Amino acid sequence: MNPDVLASAARSVQARQRIKAHIYETPLLPSRQIGAEAGGRLFFKAENFQLTGSFKIRGASAKISAMAPGRHLVTASSGNHGIGSSQAARSFGRDLTVVLPETVAAAKLARIRSYGVETRLHGAETWYAEQHALELARDKGYEYISAYDDPHVVAGQGTIGLELLEQHPDIDNVFIAMGGGGLISGIGSVLKSFLPRARVYGVAARNSCALALSMAAGKVVETEHLETLADGVAGGLAEETITLELARAVVDETIICSEEEIAAALRDLAFKENMLVEGSAGLALAGFAKVADACRDQVNVVLLCGANYDRDKLVKAVFS
Image (tube, rainbow, N blue to C red; front, side, top):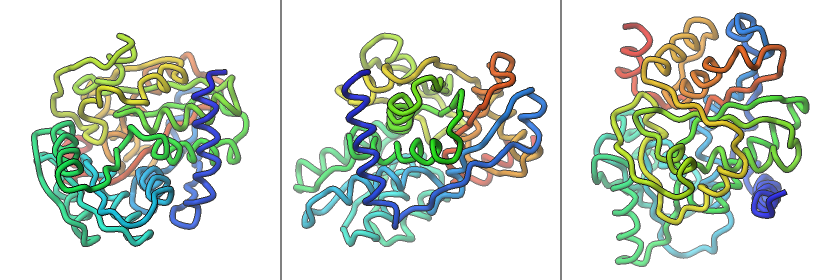
């Protein structure tokens, strides 16, 4: 077993103890209709019901709870990490600045500002916001919190894997949307450490799939980023990110989905499962749909990573 994978799983066990009072343990819900149509046992890990509407509070809480008090904090986010970091900063009594891309969903921006943190808008996508946040950290002496490229953040996301193992010990396949890689690296490390036979599927949006392409190349590569319904996973990667090698170690198969496939998954979740979620959650289901025939008669888990959707964008995808 890869020692880095084992170390990440161990950090998740430790992180769970620090953050359990500050998050929800989200349910593992059986599918009402999609699973039966696919011929397998399908469950949804419902992080869309998380305290902040997204899994990101786990990683932010794990990081902030492990930090020494005192310095002002700064982070960058396409929305959900900013919301999670804002809630975690308030829970642990820390001052925070959140830098967001100018294209951030209006609902996410309003939610972040509701926590009373300082916000700044910078750049067309998350990578540029991240660079500006790093500049603030250097120039003002702030302490930077990465949305994904940090062992404590990865460990916090991995607490989802620990919950999954308790909720259903016989999982065959897990489908997880990929952005910067913190989520899939954290959950994957836990699963490969405690249930190595489980297959981890990483699902990427074709319009912004930096991690998938970097995994294939074995190094961080630049790619074009187009608008995507899965805006929560859009953007590039830090040059030396720890998540690349972790993801390569734990992901068994990568699936790339089109915008049409993501929209179809969002419609299925709305009309067949009675759940409205953000595009990144729909992306994970879209990945399952592409390989459902190969997963028949198996226990499949789709991670619904959040529900902090832009209303106009979701209405257009689901009802048009």
